[in-house]
Amino acid sequence: MSLAILEQITQELPAKLSGDVVSYAKSVEAALPEIFRTADVRRTDELARQLVFIAGVKKLYSICSSNFWILENSLHALRHQAQEVRLGSLIVSRGSPYFRRLQQLQADLVEILSGQGLFEFMELGSYSEIVRRLSRER
Amino acid sequence: MNVEAITVLLIRFARRHRTTFTEISQRQSMQLELGAVVGVQEHYRASGFGIEVINPPGSSQFVVKTSTRGAPWNYSRIRAVLHDDAVDIHMNLMVRGAHDDGIYCVDVGVTSPNAIPAKNPTKGKWLCLDNKDLRSFAEVKRLVVYPMLLAQFVGIVHEIKPRFLRPPARRKYGRHGHIPPTLIVLGHFSGNSAEIVRAYPERGFQINIAENFDVRVAWSRNEETRSPLYWGDESKAPQMDPKKVAEALIAELAEA
Image (tube, rainbow over all chains, first blue to last red):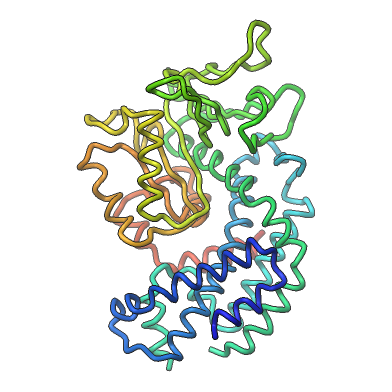
């Protein structure tokens, strides 16, 4: 169910990124017994579905976030030595169209996730902790 | 959690940013290689080294070497100097193996200064760096850290810089000095990979695994004494409050 929803969400994405999101969610689905055991939370279908869904969203977030922040931080670190970076045929600076698109992508996703109360899960590395929080919210 | 509402919003989001996602898909490996070389630069800066970026002749841009092809003098390099100690940092560098005539390409190569010609040599063809001139190196992967990835990296160190796999540890390498062979990874430790890494010092392995690299870079950016390749005092950063990290990231985003 959750995997089908994630496939629906990512159908507009390039196959490589869509595959990354769905296969990551599948890997979390495979680890559900261990996650619930570690969290000491009783497994229910609803919690399991939510967790797999969050896993897919986390992967989507990490794709957007890592690409923006790595570029942003690289430009920041190089600011005294070079205003622009050439990556193959692409020239990137803080004002370049590509950089702005990445910035907007990240801002829009953070806004959606914050508005829906999902953002707190994005930076949590432990799925056991996520499932504990989900269980407390019920 | 309203899964239906979130799904609708995310479908709209994916549709609106379809072009950007296509660009990301095509460029994320290159961006990660840029992130890795800058991460190594920032480690040296945090360790007290002076940093000088040397761009190819006639270019004011930082030119990233994104593949094994191309001569190194056509791309930017970084020089790190502390007192009488200096190294050059190169991207996608061809280097001779430690055991035979094999030639390998490391994502980030830390070399003796001027070991790579600054322009096309007039005599003979430049093939690769001599192994003795490679001080250390870093590899970068956009994966989670899993045991076989660690085994693969140890194999690479064995072929290129095996000295880092036997005691005693080299004094000038580590948190406050030159980088030991380092695996930079975007993902987190999975399975029992953290336990494997914890056992490296006991086994005499002087190698560093920098997982969650994007989080590390964000963590180190406002503090020049923090290396993005190390979490600082072990008692602090690995247990960072993820909520605080998220808040810091949002604040930076708003500022940007």
